[in-house]
Length: 406
Image (cartoon, rainbow, N blue to C red; front, side, top):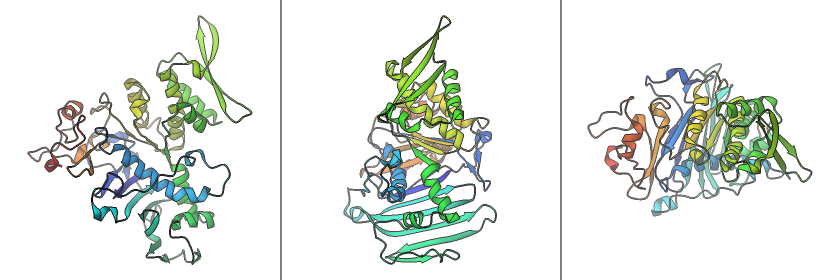
């Protein structure tokens, strides 16, 4: 599970910003919170709102860039790379609108949890060159914090208990040490646990092609298929079943089953409506996330589906009888039909917009202060006040309306 992510000097993000999935001490919907292995309370969902060009996608891309920086070297020698790694490498680009930032490193820091430990990983990258890197962990059983390694100015120091993990003296300054350890010492319990989270604990949806997404997400798991069918039935779609036919060329054909007047008919997914095709591109990811307890990150989730279906999916993550394994959904959106106190806690609603110097600012509704210094009430009309520009990030403007109130 993702606990917290911090980034500085990345694309439109000039100043340090932190995206937090740790629950704050507010009263609403506490029964929906996920209790992590260390008893910390985490959020099951978070949505980021803001105008086009404000920097919403850059927050998502920053997390994805860090994941790819760690994982790509592990797959570099494999002929058939994992599907999510076939995409073009996300270049690490610093903030462009001041000289100091352009010549400074991009900084990433992430806290994530497995069943064994909470990890803190820091990576500072000057274009592609790594200038600083460290990894530490806090064990669930003992709550003890242990430094695993630190790398600075080309010098590497291994923490107590990890000195046996020998590191080559000529390791490339563009290769993360965590990636090197993943390649060389994957069988080490701590290294394997940490790398496994980057591989399987967080997933980024490629929302460009629904059919491609389906090819990547369809699994042989009967449980995942049944969950997909249950979601389709809950959404009152006229589809009773579906099957996936794998072709010799390596592609797939999806068939949907309909029942009309007691007779069964089957058509290809390509014959379905664009909305149904988009839904089939999304639901396997949702189902797999819920079944495995992973963190699913989706840019512009509302662009794929009807607002009623969007709310339904959000509430799947909010329902801990369905979300049994601590899955998390993080997405950007323009849809305001779900921006209300029934669906979200205030710490689950985030805004991004640009300041006067073209730098993006990220903040949650729970930390927003009104001009008189008061907080937003938990029973406020979030969508109405957002449209009125009261939360700073006006949905129709790229810039913050009043920087001083943030």
